[in-house]
Image 1: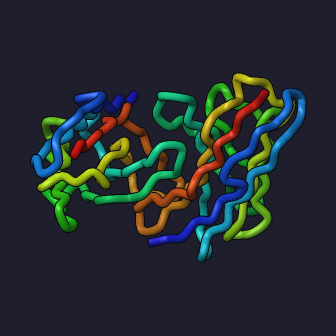
Image 2: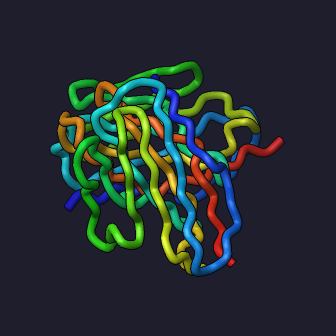
Length: 112
Length: 114
């Protein structure tokens, strides 16, 4: 299995501000994935983070709102920019090893 | 487009009961299927991974089956305990590449009562 550490675990933020979520994997992985889980919903993929290139965003998600960094093969960050109450969700990072997916503990974001 | 559905959406059972959670997917061209557990407000914990060539996988009190041709998987939980209370999610992977994305089901919220 893979161990993925994500922080912060939760935060309450003012609208208009930005929050950066960090994700650390215990070993090198090619791809890292960022998901959003809105209240009562399943997971929606935001983007795939590639080391050495720009992230690939899913339909409905844009880089200006969700900038992603991937400086090396074990670390990635997701920023939620110019937050509004609609951004209140759980954000999760994920990595795959041998075609099995592993997840961080999630970041529970509340925007007030 | 792959769609994954889980039935029931919610389930409440008394402690000790055996139970079955269902997962169905519309496109049978999958590489593998994974079952996860999610506690409220937390991340996902991988429970079982079934490759498309396999029929079932077991881990402790959990048994997952896969019928790829009919687009179905079940998660069987034996002798349920209050600590099993969580949301259970299934997810399918279309192909083997490292960039392969998962398509998640809608989840089943399980409550095991004393």
